[in-house]
Every structure is written in structure tokens, then in C-alpha cells.
Length: 410
Image (cartoon, rainbow, N blue to C red; front, side, top):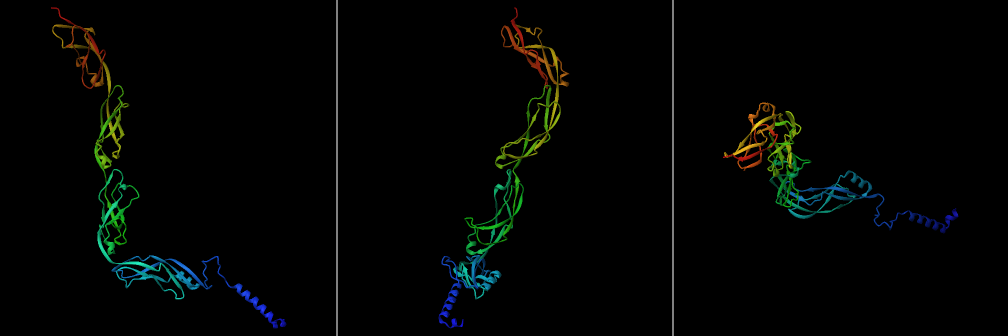
């Protein structure tokens, strides 16, 4: 062994082997991965997203726009420092506008409270800012709502706002662009009563674009008065059918004679009544009914929806009246009129009506006649003309009489 150690070639071979082993242990960049960064093993790169940006300026007199709300911060350095900064986020990203003047300018976005041993990159690194004079002005608030939220048959009157004025603060050029200040009421369903809702106040330009301003108060109360579009109309009685035989309908009366209808204002004036239909075909005694009030198309509501109807009837009795003399009207003195049928010159009829009336009638209460004023000599068929008391019906046994008209002998 000592002999080998003394041999210079042996020493050279061993040195070569050690050199090869050391070369193989050194890390290499992969040419197929160009994005790899050769970072020392004790260093780390970390990207922190959505880091808020603080703005430093005179908030009492100025308004600043153009500063991004957040930025991305890339940290590179020792692993422990990068990890600590990422976890604690004890650094601050800011834009210092303390000495900036009114107008537009490009300013750097900087960071503080971060270790000097870390390399920091901020994206974006600059902001194009606008610095304007702060102005506060009072504006009236206009309430608005979608008319479709109002139930059909109801109308909404002008809404009221409380408070009806707000103070708006912002950059002077933005304040000068305010054209509308609106509080919009939203409703999840139809409304048929007065409502009060909270609504956010928006400042808008002439093109209805929302403006970046501060509104105080930002929420107001909006009251929308709602009332029904209604009027009162009479309830008409409409008879349906024919009463049973022997029954007379004396009267039909309503407990309620008017109804209130609700309809769209444009349609309301078209309706002047509603109706109740009474079917008299099955009524044979005094009856009280509850019937629906029938409305026309376009009426959305009626009150009352039903009414009580009282029907008074009289059951008729029937009897015959015989031997009522037939009178001759219009006879010329120079002519004679003889009855051929009925030969006795008397007619029979059947009467019906209220029993108390019918039972008290006699032949003397009826007048039956024929008109011969236009007749020439000869035989004729003429109509029988009946005059009868009221509230009864009658029917002749024969509708016509056969007569003979002749001149008297000289």
C-alpha cells in the first residue's frame, strides 16, 4: 500500500476519479426548461397577490383617482425572510402624494417595512393619478320605480323621499358632471298598498353612468302611495229562463244594489254596471239566493263578490169564465149582424193568476167585442178582442167568431 502511495501515477488516477465525482454532484440547469431560475438553495421566490395600496395625501381638500386598489408583490431572498414576509405581511405598499400638485401625473408605487436582504418587485410599479380639488354640494333626490311592480287595477302616486336632499362629495370635475341623483326602489313582488322601502342613492351623469362620489346619507326612505283604481256601479238583475207553469214572479230584490269595481284607469270608464243572473225556471216559492256578481273582462276585482237575492212569487190558480157576451163595435144602423158561431153570441175563456184575484172575478169583469166597421155584406171570420183585469192571464176557447152582415129590410 505504501508503495502505491509513493507511485505518482496512482495519485493522479485517484485525483481524477475524485474530480469526476465532484463534477457529477454539482446541479445543472435543464436546457429543456428555460423558465427555471438558478436560485441558491437557501433562497426563495414568492409572489403575493392582491396587496392593498395605501394613498397618502390631504384627504380634507383633495380627491385622488387612478391609484390601483391592489398590486402584486414579488419577493426574492433567503427562504426564512421570504416566508416570514408572506405570512406576516408586515410591509406596506403605498403611493405618496404629499407634495403632489393638482392635475394628472405618473407616480411610483413603493413599499416599506421590508427587509433590505429581499429583492422586491411591484406590479404595476407606477400609477397614472388624477388629483382634484374636493367639493361638497347638496342635491335633491328623485325617487324612481318600475311601474310593473304595481298590481293591475291599482295606481301609484308620486313617491316621497326622506330625506329629500343629500350631500355629495367628490372631485370638482366629477361633481360638475352630476345630472341625476336617484333612489331606485326594488320590489320582489306586486304591490297593492302604500309601501316604504330603503333605497341606495346613486349619482349619475347625463348618460346615466354611475359616478365615483361619496353620498351622505347613502340610503334614504322612499314611500310609494298606492290606491285602487275603482268606482261604484249599480248591480243589474238579469232574469234567465221561464217560471214554472202556474208561478208568477212578483219581484226580485237585491240586498246590495251597488258594487265597487277595480280596473285599469284606462278601462274603468268603460264599465257602468255589473250584473246578477237569476234563473227563475226552478223557482216555485218565495226564495232567497246568494249569487255571484258577474263582471266584464278587464275588471280585476269586485266588492262584494256575491249578493243576496230575494225572489217573491205567486202561485197561480186557474178557472173558466163562461158566457161572456160578445159586443159588436162599429155596426151601421142600416145593417144587421148575426152570430153564426158561437150561435148564442157568447164566448168562454180560461183565466189564471193569483188565486185571491182569480176567485173574485166574474164574467162582468171581462169585455169581449168584435169590430165590424170595415165589413161589407156577407159572412166573415172576425177576431175576438178581450179586455181583462190586470195581473191575470187569459185564453179564449175560440179566437174568432163567425158572423153574417146583411142590410136591414126597408
